[in-house]
Amino acid sequence: MSDHRHVTVKDRRTEPAGHGRRGSRRAGGDGGQPPNDPAYDDGPSRGPGRRPGGLSTGGWVSVAMTCVLVAGTLGAYKVYRDIDGNITRQNVEEKLGADRPPETGALNVLIVGSDSREGADNKKYGQHMQGQGERTDTIMLLHIAPDRDKATLLSFPRDSMVQVPECENLKTKATIPSGIRMINSTFNDGGIACTWKTIEELTQIHINHFVKVDFSGFKGIVDALGGIEICLPKDVSDKKAKLELTKGKHLVKGETALAYVRARYSLGDGSDLDRIKRQQVFINQVVQKATSSGLLTDIGKLSGFLEAVTSSMTVDSKLDVARMVEIAQSAKSLTAKGLQGVTIPWMLDPTDTNRVIWRQPAANELFETIRNDTEVTASPAPNASAKPTIKHEQVQVQVFNGTDKYGLAKEVAAKLAAQGFRVTQVGNARPATGNVPTTALRYGKKDAEGADYADAVAARLSGDKLTPIAGKMKPASVENYVSTIPVTEPPDGPIIQLIIGDDWKGVRVPTKIPDSLKGDIIDSKTNPCL
Image (cartoon, rainbow, N blue to C red; front, side, top):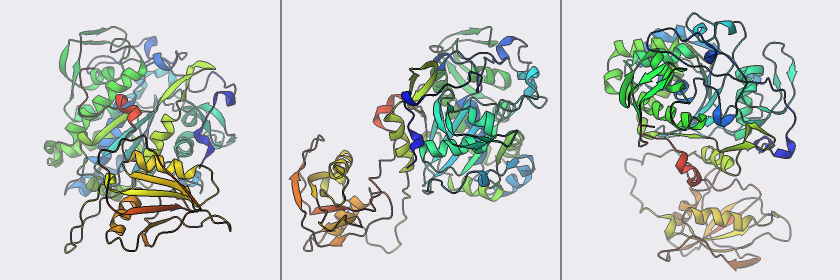
């Protein structure tokens, strides 16, 4: 497990103030030119809660996610083949190194929003910045479950101070030493490969692909969809953003849509986090419209939609036409109802209130949830006899530690109890000769249903699925386990023994966003009038 996931205050080192600082940029009205005023220019950062505007979560993910997912139709391959020439591809895998997190069957896509002012359309947002390269204030990870029916969007605050691994400077090719820096400096200084490496090391989540998009891509997707409906809780008269809309619902396109997702001071509490929540609602609106039957069954509309999007995209070299179609077809069941957005838990950096650090243990618990999303619902064999469903509450478990790691039995017992298992006892199973090499699940030889009950436990353990063994073992010591989880009905089934060995991989965390972050989840049920 990488040590890069923890950044403590006492480890903080002085960092040049110029890294990744972004200024306020606003968008103008529909179809017009953005205002030529300082609101579009880069300036000094004003802290994470009052951060300057930039096309953030809603805009970038709407472009990237829908482009990859919406074409799961019979005509998809032809559509993708026709627009494939629009997409720029970049080979970054050779720069990632060999020491990477394992694949789990899930699909994880790194999404980066480029603030490049190159090109006729993008230069409107800061012509004086042309030739200064790319920057980003938007870094996200789109996690699509192994069954491809649910998705979680993780948003990384761009002012996060994190441990950055050694990277290659994008311009000079010189080595950038590892150290604690702002997370968006990884893209500014080391390009997408450095951002990819950093996110993998911080989260220990394997990333499969990346997608990079720019301003014109966002407007193109909204216009190609015929506009997106938004809802305002009050009248908005934002002279700086050039956003003039009345309370209620509106169908917005082009510059007005861009102004809406970038506006901050005139909506909500003026914070960037409040804006992110509003933009994540926008994502659901885009996905709902992009995955509607009206678009997917009309090859002409679908082609125009993808044409607009792909002209401003850069992806990794492995995200080719065949791979896009494969993803699209496998994700046919993914709709806006299956999408949840959440921002990495954070707190102000005590050493610099213009920066943030990730709040622990909440951040690592969120990453663990994503890492452990490894289950694929198996289709039953045609002639297989149906087995009775065994609920966690029906399974009694004894947890015995066969290693020299102190307190491991109680730690594992608590995690199993939190998932509903009835843990009855914990103890020590380590023989005098040394650690037990292999983790095992055991049940009584006379328990006819013992293997089925043990399978319920095996399904919640990380690593390769364990085959239950008939015959229990006698522990060196044992004590009753008192759980803080109330038991409504004591189970009467067989008792299962979990003996923890040297190869222990851990308990698989339930594949849901932790309860501590439920108030921060944005999904299709969230009130759109934010």
